[in-house]
Amino acid sequence: MEAFLGLLAAIIANTMAIQPNLAPFGIAQDARPSALGCEPLAEGPADTTGQYVCRKLPGADPLYEEYILAFVDGVGVCNLTAVTPYRADDDEGHLTRRIFADVTARMTKELGEPDEKVDVAHTPAAGSDLLLKHTITAEERQIFNQWNHLQRRFQNLQSASVVLAGDEGYGLAVYSTYRFAGNDECMRRMEQTTGLSPDQ
Image (tube, rainbow, N blue to C red; front, side, top):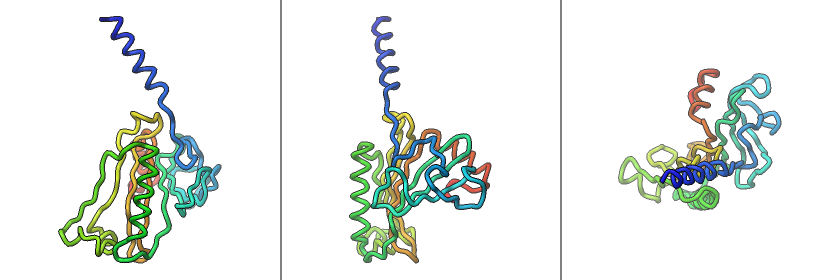
């Protein structure tokens, strides 16, 4: 029995050791914003703790217009968010819903099936697709997919999500976010350094 348990432990350890890393859009967790040509959202020296906007990345996807990095000096990239262009779209959000479905399919191929598929409305009327653009923009409805516990499949990832978002002035867009290992602690360090809360 002891021999069997020893063999089982060795197999588990070996399986964990060969878990791959994932480099979303060609970005490794130890990437530095300056090497990627990313611009800081707040003025300051290169590669200081903060958020950065990147127009192009090594593995950029033409579906997206820009990428936002949360970076902590001495730690690396906390997370990476890819943002599609905002579009006026129609009231039912036909185009943006197609993009959301396409992004979900791509991420599912990469990460497996989402752990959560959320489409929640605060009122019955807000659940109608006839006014999707208005209800998303007014934050009366939330649509997103979430991948949890990615560290079971990838050494360097914690979680990921894709969100259908809206802005009154710009329309609808899709945000895809990859959170690297240790994201929560990384974002706490960013908040302590910059004074910004993780959602700013």
